[in-house]
Amino acid sequence: AAALHAIMPHVSPEVCQKSCLGMRVVGTPVGSSEFITSYVRERADAAVHLANEAIAMPSFQERLQLGRIAVPSPLLWLAGQVPLKDLGPEAGIELVDDATRRCLQSVLPGSRLTDSAFAQACLPEGFAGLKLIRLADHADARFVSMHLKCMAVVPSLAPHLAHMFADPRTLDSPTARAVVAAHQRLVDEAPVLAQILDFDNPDPRPGLVRAVQRELEADRARKVYNALPDANRKSFFHAAAGDKGSFTALPTCPSNTWSNQQYHSSISRSLGL
Image (cartoon, rainbow, N blue to C red; front, top):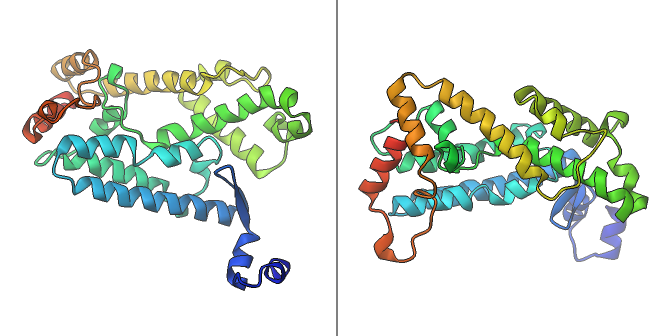
């Protein structure tokens, strides 16, 4: 810190000290756990602020579109670089997921959004969901998939960096331990992923993240469906699963925008509320 301040005397000693904790490399925080957590928290706080702005919008459709796309997107990208689920509550990931849930609750006045209904809303449209993004559902899949892709391609593209992406089971570093822990959580949730996320045979295909997410979504959809209380509710689930794009498609002109009453009624029916 003293050396940095000597080179750049116009920069305060406090900023120089903070700079020694880490840096951002191509948008990815690299450095101490304190620096990475602080970096993620700043983006989490910005996402929560955006969610609050969305909830204040008069149109229910606009609220949910913004909450679905804009609120989690910056952190969703970071999930491939940083073990979000290992950062603890200080990183604010749960706050972002809570903000996404509040965006959905705001378009359902008079209805209580249950945990099962929110879980369904976070499924893709093909599984009767609203395609909302809950970071807790995506973080491990993106983090492990990105590491395996790097294991597959980095040795040939940048051999001098290959040691950074060796089999994490053979390494003793915070990142390696985070990869192994996230991998175990994924396999515990969906055992079929042990074949897709294979440390002994890393898959370089571009669609690896999506392939992993599809397996997780199918498994979560089965759990949501099996937990539905009766045949009538399950029939609504089947009906909603065949109605792709109704809630996530962007209107081509103002006259095609849903009224708040239409949007509320349709989503409530789709989620069994």
